[in-house]
Length: 409
Ligand code: RFL
Ligand code: PHB
View 1: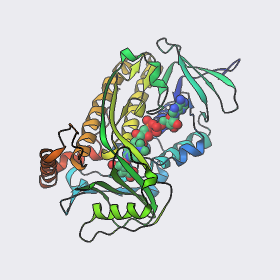
View 2: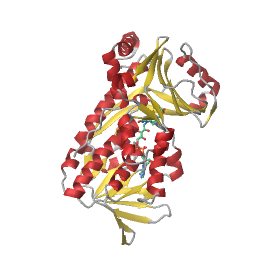
View 3: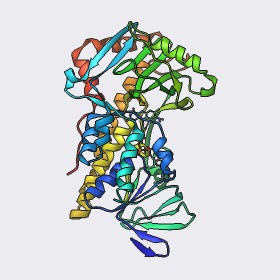
View 4: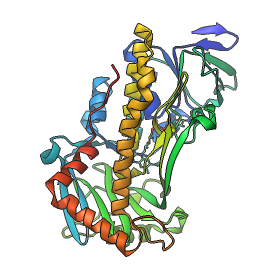
């Protein structure tokens, strides 16, 4: 709604059109609550950005519940297990048998495309792309606002009741909270992942997590034509220093198992290197500013939790906002941070556990408990126990497919 002089009003100002911002906007719209989404990148950029690929069971259910899962149901690849590969052996964790649920492999950018098609092409609510100079104001009052410059260069002001900071790890929302008020828990791992996307048909139906003596490797996929693969590399690695031949050879070595072969294919984009980090910012609320997704917490990708956590946060947030706008109750907002952080810390632990069990920690100066011969012994014991004990395998399975979502209402 325009108020004149470049001042507009909405109920919820959402910064960031990633999974957190777009799922929040959709949940609110379905509940009849107006919002405006501000995104610094272009629509085509956010639709092409290759990131996560694994949707937890509760994430799929949520996307179905808000009516944006038609293509996901047609094109997503349901998986009923994963393999852990180590010591020359392959060990399947059978999710269907252990917990009766599975995951779906469907690219994050496909989820983003589906949400944007629903909102923008379906004329259900605004998304302002290519905004700059986003700044938050008065977030400790009940009349916060956001100033920004839009794609045409016009300075605008958005007044709202609540600001949702869904702008990811490098966003500005978190910086609106004074440093002294935040507790930051962080761990940086002494390695990165080199990721490639190859036009090559997957040769195996499920994901393979390999803990090889030369380092970790992950075999994943995006579609019946596209394979997604990762290699553990040193943290300062320049992706360009790896030739395609070296990448395929190293993947072949680390993923080797009886009867397993890789289809090689043309790379769809340049290989990328991603740092591995765990980070939690507490609390996730500062007055009428609520942080969600990567803006508040990062997990290393080994547990496939980042996008799923972002979506779980905004489900809690949407419930809290419905209570605020329908009944004037702030109880949900008051509980928001604690409710989310319970799931966040579970996912932090699971992601740290998967990471520490499967990677090679070989820096002699690495003080971590997994470096050196004692650390290797612990890793191998944990891997053997996980694949050998039904109780341990069930714990991996229920975390991987996703624990049920908590609500505040
Ligand atoms: P996003 O997706 O980063 O979205 C934030 C959005 O905010 C915009 N933005 C701004 N907009 C306006 N003003 C500003 N000042 C802004 N600053 C930033 C950005 O352009 C962007 O569009 O955060 P969100 O929504 O919290 O979603 C989080 C997920 O993207 C992230 O956790 C996952 O990608 C992590 N992740 C994985 N998660 C999974 O659940 N399963 C996986 O299998 C998985 N694999 C991965 C991953 C992340 C990876 N990388 C590249 C970090 C694999 C990799 C390699
Ligand atoms: C992916 O397909 O990109 C992917 C899958 C599982 C992970 C991380 C990334 O743990």
